Image 1: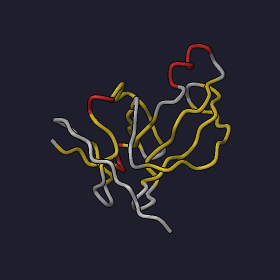
Image 2: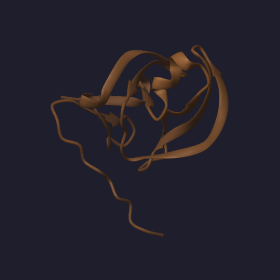
Image 3: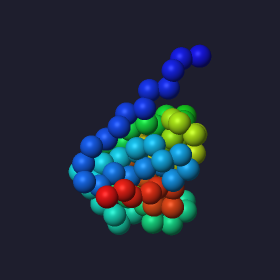
Image 4: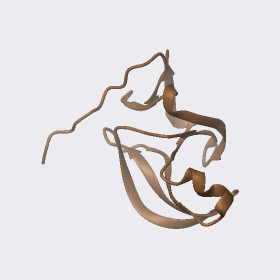
Length: 110
């Protein structure tokens, strides 16, 4: 088994995993705070770090049919949200490759 590589983010505001406090996303990559997740409010990010992805699955979400992958903290394996792999509706294509992180699963530092 190899060593776990943890990326540290810099910036004025960093979102961290609530369980183990490992960096997950930078405020600079925040696109929207107006999303809904499994556990309540969620944020859309351009990029996320220190994560692993689960298998892809087709899900019907509020915004339509998508293919998503759940994302987990690479340190403690806590589920943090999901990654949009594919959007079927043209108006939702901008989400492809982006990350939803659930507010309930994050700490904000800064």
